[in-house]
Length: 224
View 1 (cartoon, helix red, strand yellow):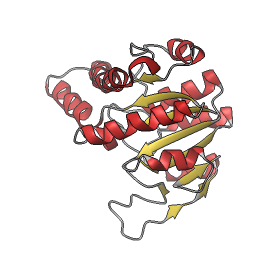
View 2: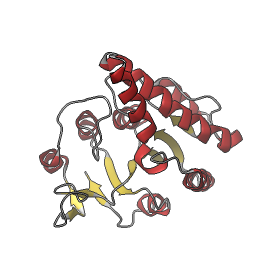
View 3: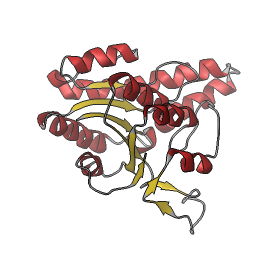
């Protein structure tokens, strides 16, 4: 199976969690050993948003804010690749084409951000489209998609299954902003919907959930 895994910065980097990163490294090695092709996109989390805040204080434009956040996400990608060793593609890919080439060589690709105006969710969706991935798993700081923010509302209800059409109804923002934080950003959803990709949103603090999703068992929220 060809898999794209998006690991939210809110999971591994808010605060930075070396133990959890190590668990994801072990998971990626296991997926590769089982014959799966894997591309990973990691976010920059709180650290990226802190730098965005600094950039705002320095009165930098939103494009510059995005560039700084991208640099942070690529640092986390480099951590993954250094630990993956020979099964990784070595350097952090800077384009979707480089990621596709890495996968074609049987390596695990790990990317951060790509360019200003684009979230890491959208990067993951572009990879799905480019390599015709079978599955996108998003390892989130929530255990699925809810009808409203469960951190604010105790009566929030989690969906087991959603269509892309229904998902648009739970958006809190409908356009990109530097540091946007929601389950899946709107541009990513548009790309995934056009690709008719299968997406599973899981609790990323338990990496075993990713393997459960890959095995086709019920976990988190399925979007298709």
